[in-house]
Length: 170
Image (cartoon, rainbow, N blue to C red; front, side, top):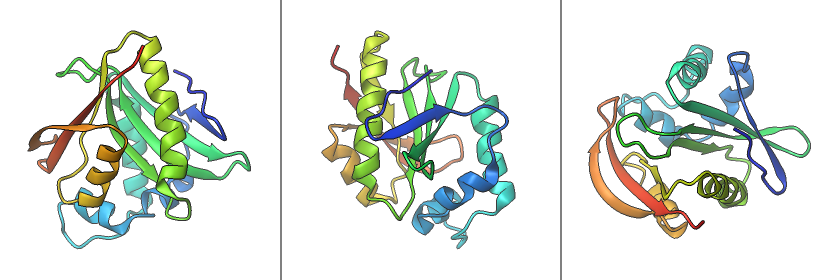
């Protein structure tokens, strides 16, 4: 899958993705790290955690991992996507993690616009995302991007998440 993103490059990664390159993006939001690790007090991932993130993105069925780079080639975001989600049979954003040095909306909006356009062109009717319930600010951001509440449930790691969806325009 390829995404045309204005102002950035979003390249799908394969099994040769470098965990060190992703580590600073994954660690850029300590509240995400803590919520991801079930609030154990951990606020930084290590290289093994980054390797596991990349491995899971590579081996999961229908999974896509995109490295989002500035035109200067610096990695500024990571996007994981299931197309389709195995149970929901709809596209599902697993994560959109933006480096703290860059404004979330500055990167997220062009990436999401490109993703939503691509999914709509492929015939999908909606896209889903499920931020962790403890990340209230992130849930509000998704809402401001047109994603609406569907339900609260547990994800695969037993974390409470808010399932949000957005209809796609064809």
